[in-house]
Length: 115
Image (cartoon, rainbow, N blue to C red; front, side, top):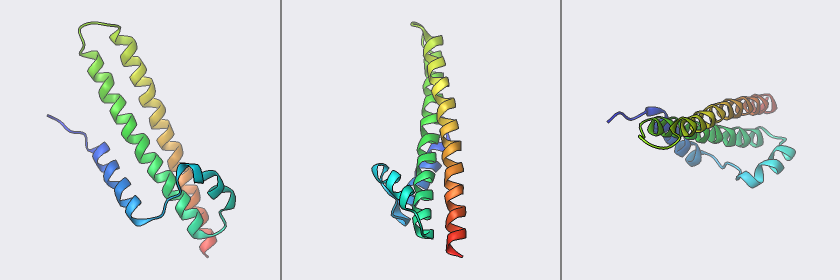
């Protein structure tokens, strides 16, 4: 059995980030963004987006695997099901990329605010 390392590594990174920092909850993010003034504030927001990117990467990997699983089914509209999974996989990949852009932007703000 072949195991993809991407979801495993993403999960490990997520656990490490959670252990090392106080990341705002999803419901706290809008307020955290609106009120961010210190390097620590921007670092916390960057950590949130790093966690989101890891989560989106894991979702993309899951949908890739499900798409392959549907293609092995003998009955049903496997083409449509696989296309659905492939579409979601692409959207999660894009979401992860966008989250990383926001992460880097807040890390830059943290660096410039800290100086």
